[in-house]
Length: 156
Image (cartoon, rainbow, N blue to C red; front, side, top):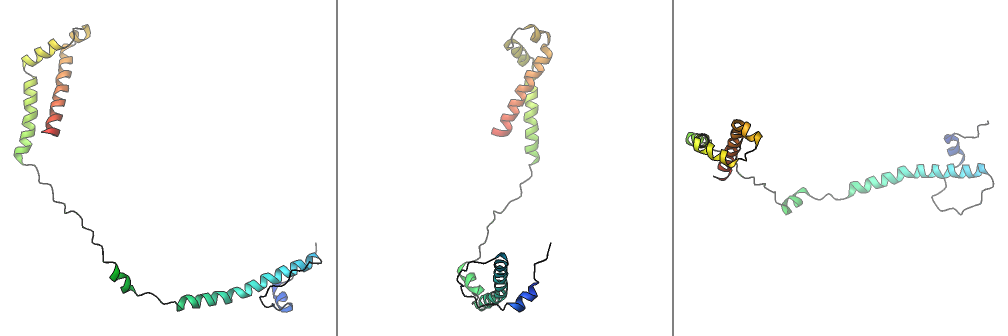
């Protein structure tokens, strides 16, 4: 395998870059000329690129910068007004005692024998319920107490 590549430094010496004008398309005679033309074209682009970058950089630097005060005058500073959070007042001793007294009143009323007899009369007379009346009665009273305390805490 023969090495047909030519170092770039030699190509630059041999072929001086042509001005960046459009050259008419020519039909290449063989692959070597096509490769040489392609390399020459790439070299021209590489050499032109730093010049273009320099021109663009100087253009960006010469653009006038808008003053900062102009924007600050047009847009007044936005003050975010946060609602003032007032610390919650701790519950008074009377409020705490009142909640506990209400729960105590529910337990006292539900433990009266009249309430127990009325709940027994309302329950169905099935064997399971009759045999386990003590537990069923405690369960029903617990559910009633739960519902009453929920209603008191959320709606009173």
